[in-house]
Amino acid sequence: MAEVASRKYDVWQFREFDYEVSMGRTEPLLQIGIGLAMAMSLLGACSPSGDSASDRGKLVGSYGLAVGTNQPVARKDLESSMLKLSPDGTFMQECRYAGGKTDSVSGTWSYSDRHVQFSVFRDCAGVWPPSPAGREGGANLIVEMTSTTATILLSPDINVRYERQK
Image (cartoon, rainbow, N blue to C red):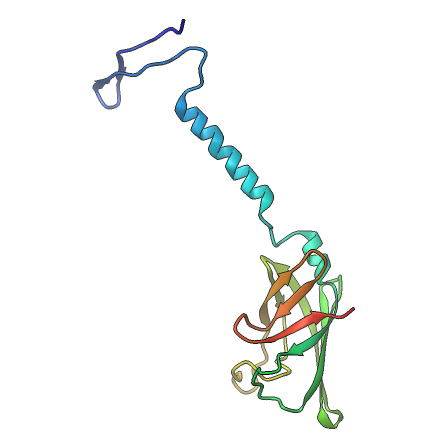
């Protein structure tokens, strides 16, 4: 049978309390602790990290700008935009407008926590609020990953995105 120890003193609280230690059985608190540890490890294994090398690798390639049919844009003369992400962390973006006008920019990019950061970036369609005159800035854009490719959103609230070219 199980041995039972009772009447233990807690020297820090200076009070007496009763408890039971069952030999050969795991304590209920230990069982809860083990269960929590297992649940945390399973959650960590099942949830996407958003920082893996494979996710970054999925981003490398060429993208075309897709503008939804009902999406208002400031640049009515936009014909197309291309974005190319290179494995070395550099990118090139080109905007083509009616009349043969082009606007290009190149810089660096990085990926972290389902976002791609660009050192400099153009809003080719004119969907963002205008930036102060003479100020050229970068962008931190949301990435939607699938099992094989990625889509880069200009904003979660607008229907303008860069889609992977096949």
